[in-house]
Length: 329
Image (cartoon, rainbow, N blue to C red; front, side, top):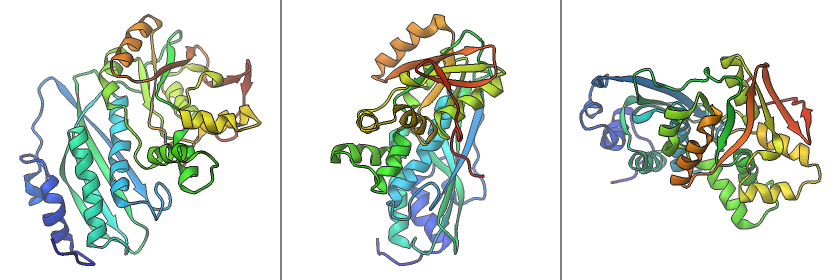
């Protein structure tokens, strides 16, 4: 394929994106719409996220990792709802640095994760912009009718769990900006997490079957648990000392003098894309079995109360947060 500096909209669609399209529903990307047949007994679940250069990814980030991050942050939303993804709509706003080679690299990233997660392109749009590059994806999935797990549903007495490790998103951003002093392998692991986080799609079925309420950790653990608590009309109490850290996160934490301040930063940084959820205490053993089957770390970090909002404790004392998580305001 000859490389050119700039490609037109229709050439980009025909040569790069049409091969990614669903063989039937996407209509070869030659129409203005996609047509998705209904699935009897199921609800259609949709989510949409956008990422912007300089806000969600760095100008120097390889565009294949940008594409994969875009897909994975959307997959994370569906996983937290207990949904099975199948297709997506895509909007690309190419900046002046996005010539044909860069667009090919972006599509390579999409192709890799389409295969890994079993989804296909259904349609979208591609335009040029004089501003920074940005990309938006609408991801579609299915759940059995009436079984989508929402933020509302937590009840007093439920336990609070989180998958994986917390804090690697913020630490990963620090790593790619050369702001950390850790061993090279720790830096590499954190950088990889920042650029290509792993959505917990393999845990979506236990979430659907056993969770009372669920949310993916994108804005920060404290902020996202607060969203869940408000939607459910309950309080949530968590123990900061029980929040799980990765090996790299633990290495960074061990180098800090002020342990409370370090934990506060990790639980408010965001970009973790783990699942935080609540479930009845009677289901804890079943959840742990499901996590072990998938070789997935699962940690109980607190409980649901009859109060309001999130109370985080360190050393038994409540901690006040100036900034519970990331916001765009």
